[in-house]
Length: 225
Figure (cartoon, rainbow, N blue to C red):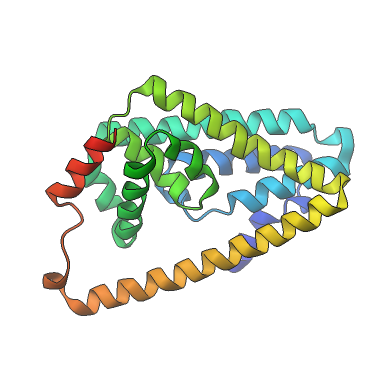
């Protein structure tokens, strides 16, 4: 698994066509398909921006940034309509052991509404669940589409451009490394905490917790739309 993760993140060893395919496919899958919640989107986009600066005209910056935004919008749209079509019970079944993440993403959506679609782009795994939850909550699609496009441009194209700028301006590069290190550390800590919570919840038995598909949760989600 670690070898596969490293190979996916190392875009510098790929051909130009492969970089386009990997970046666009990864952004699409991570944005709207449940299987993509663990993918390293931020690091790959940043690395692709660095690579565009190193290769010059071989890897077109604006094609890379524009294509990333398009596929990010498409991925979120698929997530939205999937959630709207299949509903919350389906999402919880498909999430399986990650149902707790769904509940946290729901709370995030209820708090921020349409802004959650934009903000979630910058939070690993939350960006995968949020468009699906927006669909389940039946957020009006025009409202969702605007937030979707803004989030895709700010996050998707923005990460590409940040990587490109980091290659040109040394302090940006080092600042990005520090931010990335903090983000990775926070992700690792969150995973450890999640795992401990899951173990604690499992040891307490079904009587010690409320079901994730209870009426209060679904009612709150509908209210958040």
